[in-house]
Length: 296
Image (spheres, rainbow, N blue to C red):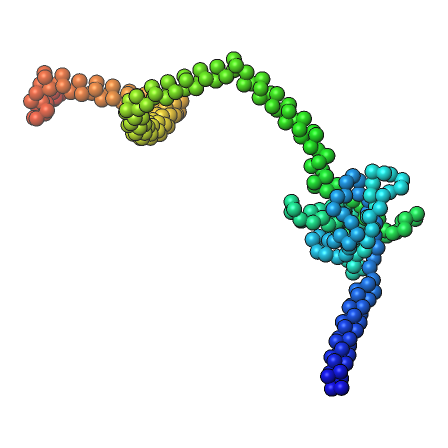
């Protein structure tokens, strides 16, 4: 009896644990599903490989919701309707854009929403729409896939151009050019010593030229000084000419004429005195001793 009682107690304990775990799971699941979401829609054109129910939705790289459903657009078979459940605290603006992104080359796919601008109004439900619609754009991979034919065509065109450039005639010309370049390099290598000597002479000539330029600069400085001295002399000559003009046109010429007249009279007086001394030299010392006639 005791053994059966122990089994019954163990069975009851295990059953209670299982019931508790189930209740906890249901409670957590109910709490999760009772969480409110704001539902949006977006339309993708082309392939949406990897996109399905439960795919992550990220807003500027942060998880904000899940993809609720993916359906075909009945009005346009090229479009896919993606219904998104997003955290209501996240504000989606009208200039926000949704796209399909991938976590690396081998990672999973998710929906990325760019935030848009602060001043842009929030997305609202338009008449005729069940949910607010977020604008979309092709993913980077889709853009690459769509542009692949054009890229291949451009690569083919480039390859054709390279084939035209590298035809046998042009290849021979390139080979001849490379051979000439090799010969020229060899010649330059043989004359490297002469080239070094030429460069040395050029450097020496440059130094001499700099010295000559310094001497020339000093000479030009002396010439400038001589020009200033000549200018001063010209000013003095000009002043002298002005004084001479004033002398000729003023009273100086008359005074000079009077001086010449006085000098001439002085010379005449000296001449008479000299003649008199020659005739009677004693008269200057003793005077004139001749007695004149004295009437009685």
